[in-house]
Image (cartoon, rainbow, N blue to C red; front, side, top):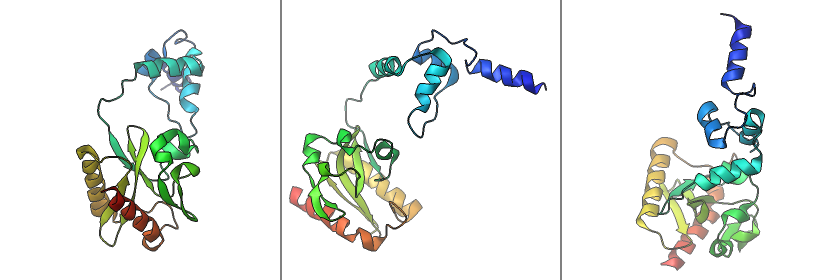
Length: 198
């Protein structure tokens, strides 16, 4: 096989030869696929390098086509999840109600809105932080608290995640120094908040 020709062919297939100039963001993605991103700029460089599409144009078209679900979708994620780490701006993921929630911080109780990083794992509801959770290996269960009314879908998401951790992971450490013992104050604070809510 002619390696030089193969390289040029891949260059062409990816639209890097100018053949995709004038394409829309959706057409470009249909042709070359999505670009993986760790720091957030990869997809935009894909758009620009192939079709000279600006960031604003890409965001505008892709956002306009997005249809949010009619009912909340929940996910229990780590406090170190990329949705937080790539932003380092927790405030954009907090509702006004969530900002006022008292949580267990590094140095005691504080308002969630005063933190730049989560100290407990998060329950996301359609993109917003709607609660906190910790895995308690003593009881093989998730201690969790939602900032609003917990519907059936949220309770099912907690149950699925709890079973996954118990059956496949055994524990849910957030970072290397996290331990069942270091988690006790956060677990207790979450359980106390959950009791107050009832």
